Image (cartoon, rainbow, N blue to C red; front, side, top):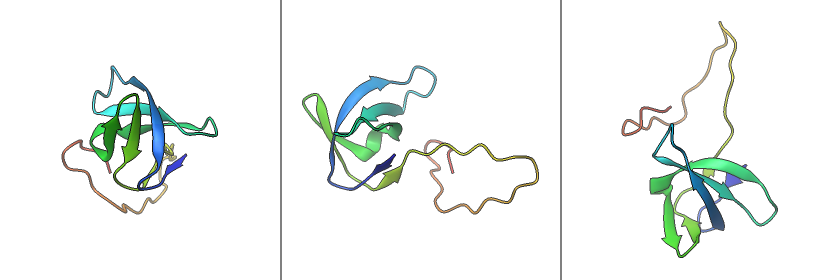
Length: 77
């Protein structure tokens, strides 16, 4: 799911394994994990502060990936 900046989404649950991530749901029922600091809370809803793609990659050994953005705070690329 792609989250666009300024879009309003529903917060669903926080990750126990990755506490800096929140599961969000958009108006079409799309779901995905977003870094909590990319959201501004408005009650039970949130507004995206940044465009974000929730797709999780599952590369195979030997595949080359291009890093588009580093998130040193969380350790994710």
